[in-house]
Length: 195
Image (cartoon, rainbow, N blue to C red; front, side, top):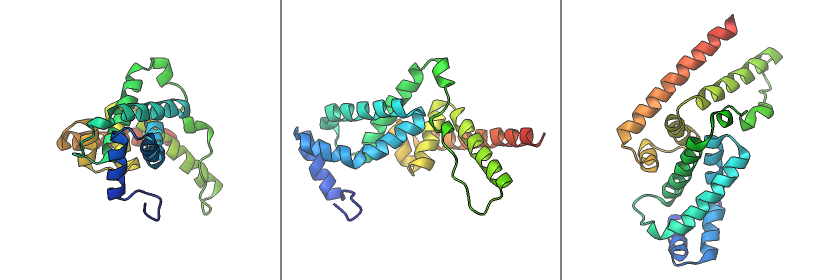
């Protein structure tokens, strides 16, 4: 383990091997190491704390059942987050239209306020943040997943391609189109605010 609490690569390899051999304690170490990242990804994709917790739990159950198939051709984090993202996409596909229109989890939280902004500036900044979130939520699931993996999780295009089982060029196209769609929606929102 490193000072930051993260496993170094050699420790992770040993823990994964133990877990592949059926060591429940080793899988518990994997859970502790990655539960925050998996839950964060699920929250960003599902936009519901309860659904995210269920999805994260299901991700670890699936990972435990499939850990024998992990062969190290991709990083363990990529493999695990791939399981999480596919499960979340399945959940999104099965939601009804009414569930998609439910209020996002963060709507009841106050936006953090910058100290140097005026009250009007604070209000505008909060409205802008909500507009960005609404615009991201309106994107198609696959596009939103690519953007979340890139900008919220810090994945490279190659890692996103591995997680989503796409080629790198397709990922680049999804991200390009997603950013373009966000710009258009936010420009439209800005024009509406000026009226």
